[in-house]
Length: 216
Image (cartoon, rainbow, N blue to C red):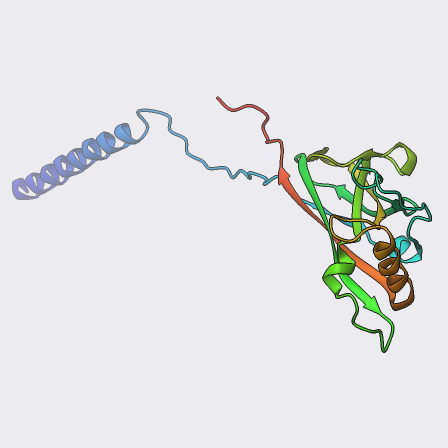
């Protein structure tokens, strides 16, 4: 009987010890409040979208002839070489639908001479190209008469900025080595043998603002 009481006493003591140990762990677990969590964010990259909106269809309808002005000895020397300029035409529209401004630089070059079949070889392509100059003009609206002669880079505003590009072609008859009657002969040759000249207008657009506008 005594032995049984000792066993029971030992079991009760073990339960008590386990209970105390359990309380220690529970006390540690609930001793303070803790929380954890996570969230996701996104950094949007500012869109860059600057492009030609339309091209060169209108220019294909343009025509030009040399000046009908008679040459005089002082014409070229005075810087008034005989010149004639075509009608000004809209050749392209650059549209900026991106998120930052674009600084646009333009260039133009005469690069193609189209001749009739069987044209003689009195003048080569380079001589013909040298007669023609592409003049560029820019505006923020489709009004050729109000466009300004292009001289430097133009800012095109973000989101909805539009730059209208116009061009005309100048035919210069006289140069340093060919003038007067010889220039007239060359002009006549061009009129008989050349059907058209082609030119290329190129643009380069560079980011001109940043988002956000200021950085510490």
